[in-house]
Length: 196
Image (cartoon, rainbow, N blue to C red; front, side, top):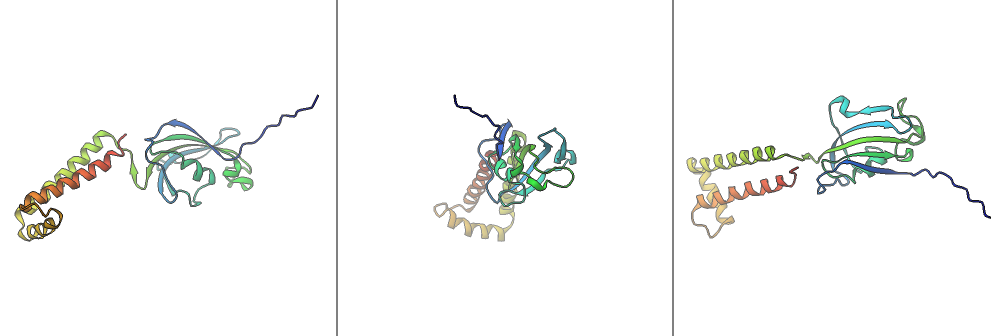
């Protein structure tokens, strides 16, 4: 018989446990500016040491450049916009042997309840926000068309630009309306990417 010894192996790094799925389309990458809510607790006893939620203000930082602990730099980049997850972070991916002040002891494993709210200022939107955004864009386009109709210098300048954009369109107003409609459509299409 050969004696086999079983030992507990301490897993190092970060493990993500998804609580609420994100949109699955937009993931942070190195250098992105993120806005997140979080609550940090000690893995050993569940003691809370910090929370942006308690302060009522999201935490904003740049990912992948060392502004946060390694566990965040690695774990958060696996999340998609709108996702809420639990990050289980070993001490070597947290504050290590030094700990952090009196709140986090040396060699403490950490647990963070995190929610990815924005990537580079972009957040998920609901249908009502999209509808409101669309109406504002349509109002903007309408105001530009009114200015085109009432301001001769503006109209002449736009006609000159529109000839370059729509060389086959003889009517400057029709060309300018096509241009404005296209701008509205592009903006609404981009906004739809962030629809919940």
